[in-house]
Amino acid sequence: MKEISVGIIGLGGMANVHIEQLEEIQGVQIIALCDSNAQAMEQVALKHNIVKEKQYSHYSKLITDHQVDAVLSITPNDVHYEIVKCCLLHNKPFMTEKPFTRTFEEAYELNQLFEVNQVPSMVGYSYRYVPAFRYARDLIRQGKLGPIRNIFVQYLQSWGLPMFKTPMNWRYSHEVSGTGVLADLGTHMVDAARFLAGEFQEVSAMMKNLVPQRLDPVTNNMIQVDIDDFSGFLATLDNNIAGVFQTSRNAYGSGNQLEVTIYGENGTISVSCEKREELTWIRPNAELNNPSLSVNELHRVPDEYKIGQMQDFVDMLRGHVREELPDLKDGYANQKVLEAIFQAAQDKRTIDLVDFRSNHITV
Image 1: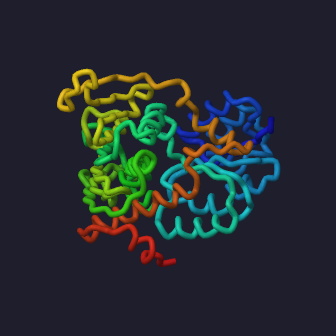
Image 2: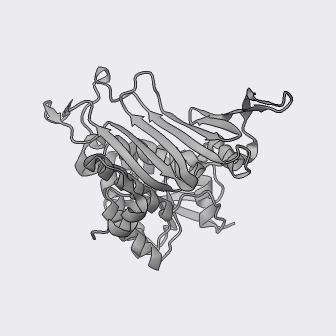
Image 3: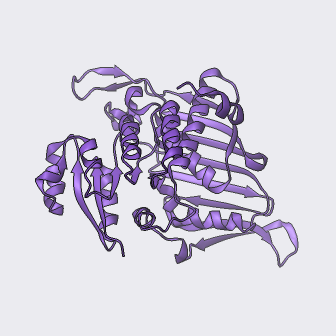
């Protein structure tokens, strides 16, 4: 079994999730860290016995460390491009958080580099590792629903509501995040649709800012918010599948509510990230031989669909690459759709992804 030495860039909340998964995988050790917060880095280093020489203040030093076999980049959106570019130039396998980049132009350049040097990669579309989503994908591919006609996806959270007094942070900054809820949550909706139903062919969209000012925790003054905190879009996917999507951080009563419903000619499947091991399947009652009489079944997901994201990442590093793994190509495809959604909302028109792919290259 190949031993894997990992370096981690960015030590925020999601880093802790990935670290916990890595700790459960045999033959993997974390040997290097990088973060702008020296105190956070010192705490993680102490817990994992990481020597001072492997605690880096700049990501490039960690990436070029020859003892680091692979990199996890768990950072805000505005540094994804530079870190991934550095990994590609130095032939260092990596996992980067979503969205893939802040802009489509950044994604295009990284994809061009990847075409020349296809470094093992993963983009953090973590909901591909919800067992119910993987099970649904398999049922669809087996033809259990017949031809797919439409898909409904929503991703709702509530922490942006004024009653929660969430202060200004990088997720509300265009300069750092690119777009708002579209880049943060919409990217997962796009990936879920691509994962389950196919590629996007055209989109129309609406993006709204619902809370125009937030408190700046540094100055204690109210400042303008320049991104969307609600996005809705319609899409046509492969095989003329119709898609309806909505995402918001201002949906009272919602926790972390990513839900997908797939409607086929012969049945309907619903899955939710909040019910990771359950799948609802509505289909005709075969015993009564009447298609208007349906049965509503709650399925427990078989164990074969359960795998952790970090296990898939480590398996990739050891040479076993599963088809479902989201790689740089998935990140690039996702960023094209996000940019098309943004342009559709700005221009108030439908964007054809085929034309977009061939014409929207400005680098």
